[in-house]
Length: 92
Image 1: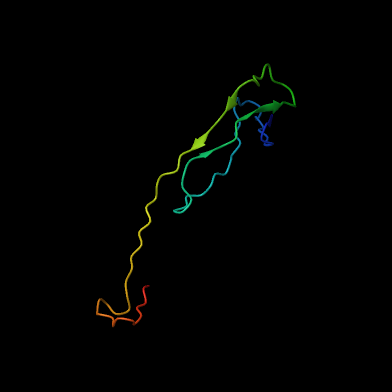
Image 2: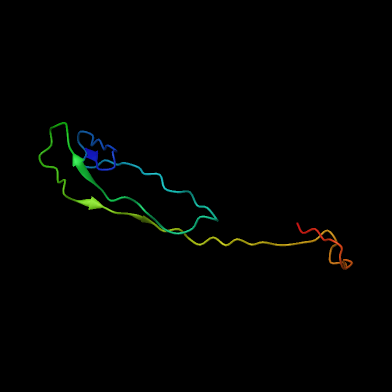
């Protein structure tokens, strides 16, 4: 079978199912939000030795991303000691 996203599924003899994988965005602490994948359907069939193949269904998936928290901690080279007015302090 050819899917509308260009992928193919081969159903082996004696089986009634086949699979196609789709790689989704990796978990990223800066890029958040859900990712809606393109609706996929069957666009064509080839081969033979099958009785009937339903090709009218489609699937639409959404990958839901969890909200990773980002923590920022500031510290200074003076370790809390006073800095003279007009001086400089370095935060790391």
